[in-house]
Amino acid sequence: MTTRIAVGLDNAQQGRACGRNAARAALESLGKSPVSLALLFTSHPDPAQVLQGVNEVLRNVPLIGATSAGEYSHQGYVERGAGVMLIQSDDILFYGMKHQRRRFLGSGKLFGQLQGISEGGLGSPFSYRTLMLFPDDQSMSLDGVVDQAMTETALLYTILGGAGLKQPAVPQSPAVFYNDQLLRTGLSGAEVLSRVPLGLALANGWTPISGPYRVTQSGDRRVIRLDGRPAREIYEDFFNAHRIHTTSDTFSETLLHYPIGICAEGDCKVSIVMGCDSKGALMVASPPAKGSLIHILSTRPDALITAAEKAIQEALDNLGEQPRAGALFIDCVSTGMVLSDAYEQQRLAVERCMGNMPFLSFRSHGVLARLQGQLSGHYECSVGTCVLPG
Image (tube, rainbow, N blue to C red; front, side, top):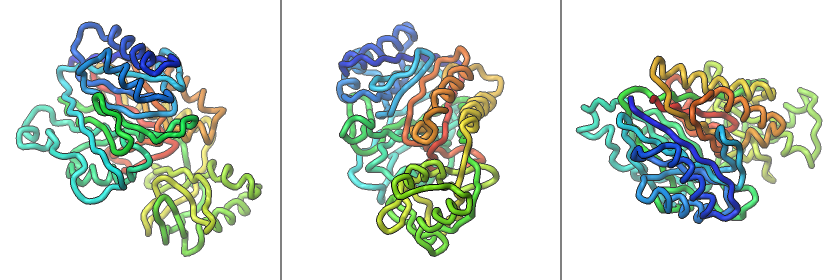
């Protein structure tokens, strides 16, 4: 394998300068090798200007990415900045894709004609297939993106990605990037075809402490009833049983620390509860389907740090004896919301585990995943790792 990765990070106040600086730093590190794919993640308040600055440096290089809540690498951590990863490879093929939508997923193909399952692709030596996906988190159903990807690929592809989100301090929609285009709705991504497996892994530090409960009614970003009762009542009983004191003012904040999860064989698909509506429904980004069995989850600060280390180690183990070129690390923004004091420790653990390997991490709205032996869909308060073989 001959794959090289370079990363640039910058937080210049002016958007175009921020994009130019990050792209130039990555390009200088990569050297004269032609770039196969560029990844851009930015928490800058003017993502359009950042994208323009990156393209001024990279020109016609294929590019995908999304807005995020922060980016970090061995060069440090930035908010209101940008991170750029450049990949050069002779043995991994990248095919960019985009899809623009103004509503939630409906009928029709989302990904078009994929090269890996075309007549020529099925017989090629590039038999390890992955979709790297970056949808926005407002117009797209995040669980729906993964479900449709699984359907359209007939389960022949692994899936890993993260959702672009609205920057907390900027009153505008999230954005995704495709070449020189900024899309406020839809997704960007890449079909990744490789001669050898990629190092892919997902982990979180959450464990069930109550339940199971059956979802008897769910709706648009709502879990309405559990076991036939208003979902809020289930949490009120849970708090009383565990002597967790809450008031009307602190109820929503307390909910953040006790997400719901669909659990199987020790693996939980986590959904953060952002509060309750006036009818007692739980507000979540990706509600489990009616009939699902869920648990209430809990964690410790050190468990999330261990989860990050576990995801990286599993990704490295999945490569076997293959050399490592570099890694993309997806870090859910919910981790910092739930355990703010532990987040910095988690970030430092990632830098330590990566060793000398170049990597770029971005704070996403959860992780989108379909990996062997795990539940599929949209995971919150979790971490995902993609290590590319060298």
